[in-house]
Image (cartoon, rainbow, N blue to C red; front, side, top):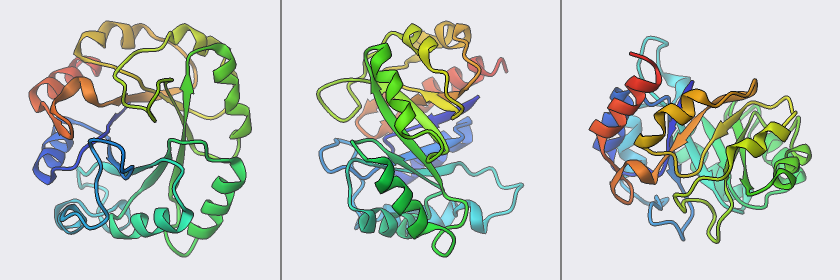
Length: 226
């Protein structure tokens, strides 16, 4: 199971989450988020020093993939962040169209970042929301099903996971939306053939952007039955 830890922006905290077993680290480039990472943050210089992108590391290196999270951003801005932050993946968390996504991929592939993965987040409160996946089938590498709320994600609440029984697509997905330490049994019990992993954020924080590493480590160990 893929464990994505999102909303991180402190280099030491990122490294600790990586050592705790996080597979993917999410960096949020949306200005309205309390976990916003600025283009001019020192993070842009710090991250590559100890955690280069997958293109420049050895397979034996235990380094998490970097996911840049964007909300209705300009493709030029996304491309700039891919380069500056050595991103392995792009997560689109707004109302991005299939055409925009296909244009973005053509811009990035193959010269800027061959093999870059694209994740499309879909906000869910009903089976009808789940069906929005059809617009993106075949254009993205992963979907992320999050709770529909007033903001662009990050409200820390669950949606009814049973509505995902309606998902019959071929794109693997991550389960998101208020997953916390108390949800270990629920996550283990959830079954869907296309579920690839989970997305963790606010329920593991001591403050916005800083994760409680001991909570995270214990959760990951239990999820993986270690």
